[in-house]
Amino acid sequence: MALPTRPFLVVYIVRHPDFAPGQAVAETLYDHFRRKLFENVAGGTGLSVIYRSVPPTGAAAPLPIDFDESETAAVVVLFDETFAADDAYVAWLKKTAIIADANGLGARVFPVAVDAAFTRSGMAEQAIRWDKWDGADQAVRARRLISSLTYQFARMLRSYLERLRHPADEDAALERYLKKVQVFLSHSKRDADGERIAKVVRQALFDGEGLSTFFDVHDIAPGLPFDKVIPNQVRVSAVVAIHTDTFSSREWCRREIIEAKRANVPLVIANCLADLDERGFPYMGNVPVVRMDPACVDRIDDVIGRLLDEVLKDFLWRCRIEIVKDNAGARVRFLPRPPELISLAGLDRTSDEKTILVYPDPPLGAEEQRLFEEIAPDVWLRSLTEWVAEAEAAT
Image (cartoon, rainbow, N blue to C red; front, side, top):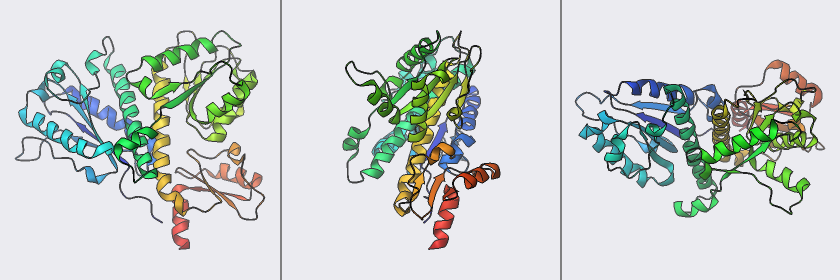
C-alpha cells in the first residue's frame, strides 16, 4: 500500500519579472506554505510551491502550468501595472484561467490586485484586493494575503475531499456537501476579558475578507438544551479557546477543550492571561498557542491566521487518509496530530488485538513513546510513513 504520488495541492506564484517588490511577496508565501507546519500532514517538504516569473529562453511568457501534475492546483497571480502592460503575460493569464476553469473544482486562479491595474484588465475572476488594505504596512499585508490564500486553499481541498467521497457526482452536485466550517469560541464569562475578547474575534471573522462565507461562528438558539448542544457543537467545529485567568477554573471551558481533543478537531489557544492561571489545564497542550495581550487584543489576525492554518492542515490530513483508509483494519485509528494520553479515551481495549494509532510524521520522541508503552502497552503508535511501510512489508 503506497501513499499517493501526486501532491494534493501545488501552489504556483506568478509575477512579472519587472515587478521588483513581488519577489519579497513571493518569498514570504513560499516560506509560509513550505513550513514544517504543513510538511507533517502533506508529506514531503510541505506544500509544493513553484515560481512562475521569468520566461524560458526564447519565450515571451512563463511556462504553461500542467494541472495534471497534482490533485488540486492554485495559481496565485501578483497582478500589477507591469503585468498589465505586458500583452504576452496577460494572454498567458487568460489562457491559464480558461484551462483552470475547465478543470472544475480542482484548479483555481487567484489574482492578487496589487494596484488599480487589475480593475482595467477585463479578467472575470474575483481578485484578492491587496490594494484596498489601506494603512497596512508590507508585513501586515503579507500576513493578510497568507490568510486569504489559506482560506481559499482550504475550500479547494474541501471540494477535493468531497470528490473522493462522492466520485460519481458532478462538480455542481458536490457543492451541496460544502457546508461552512463552524468556529466555536470557548471562553469564560467569569472574568472581564473572556467574553469581550471572544466578541472581538467573532466580529473579526465576520468582517474578514471572505471569511464569513467560510466560517459560521457558533450561536446557541434559544430553547435548545445547553448541556447537549455545546458538546455536539464542539465536535463539529474548529475551536478557538480564549484562555483568560478564570478559563481553567470553569467546568464548561474544561469540558469544551476535552471534547475538542477527543474529537480531534482543529484547536488554537489564544493565551490572554492578564495575571496568572491558578491551575494550568493539562489538556490545552499539543496544539498551537498564540500569545495575545488581553487589554489591547493586538493579535487577532495572528489568531485567525493560525486557525486557518489548522483548518488547512486538517483538510490535507483528511485527504491523505481518505485514500489509504480502505486498507486499514478495524483496529487502526487515524489522528490529525501527534497522540497524547487523552488519545486513549474512547478506544476499545477489551480485545487481545492491538490498537494502532496512526498520526502525521515525524515519529514521537523516545520519551513520549516510553510513557505510552508504560500506560497502554496494548496500543501501538505509528507515524503515517511507519504504518504504510509496515503494511507494505506485511504484504
